[in-house]
Image 1 (cartoon, rainbow, N blue to C red):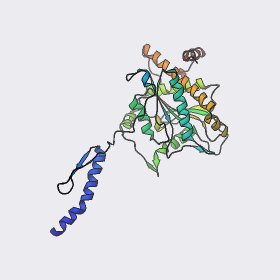
Image 2: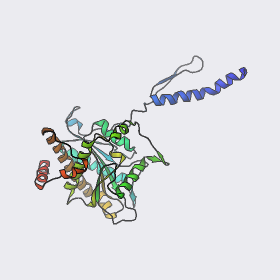
Image 3: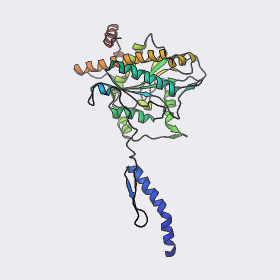
Image 4: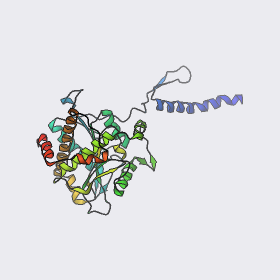
Length: 329
């Protein structure tokens, strides 16, 4: 047995090196691996597994400096990379929503009163958890995920809709939509875990009543400001357990811009005019939302209403006129 021991040890060297490398991949440490004899040391730099996805640049930061008090909007173009999202007649959701996101970013930056970041500005895929973690790590004040819907063979179905987070779906259609969207984090049927389960631990309590109420308020503003400009679905306000909306401390909505399976609506959304209308409505709703948030800071705190009653924050005609006048256009 003794004569075979050197051969056994020699065979175990590659296995040992792989085991050490695997451990380093978990800890993110740089390793000094000794070579046989007295040769040089091979230094292997391995990234930390908990660094997360690289953070995007924040546009508009220069107006307020590093400690800017301007509110930050994180815009999330859905899908990307290997995940095209919905598609119809050569048009892919991932491309359509990226153009819409850029249009909204540019419209918001024109006034110089908000900062903006895109979760992706190119054709790449992000996990749902990575998308809302970007918003949380940047300290976002609002998160808007932009998508386009699909109705399969029912090509006559059209209209935009706005989703907020809820454990209980508002309808069977909303539940099916959430299942379809959440499924994009699977490859070959296997769930791809995020970088950390810290957020999931927080969400077990689901104690973000204020965040849910603010999300619902913003959703109502989108619907109000879009009336007469954007074609909404007959049931535009929806809720579902959407993974991408699970940031417990960032008001978040998922905006379905319309149905890509409806040829007329898809062409309208893809046109410069359609993008401009979308960006104008959304930018106006965002600014009114932040105006209200500033006003709330100046008022004595009031008891929070249940998230489901947030629809009632909307709005007399006089208030709507005042809000719109504040935007100036």
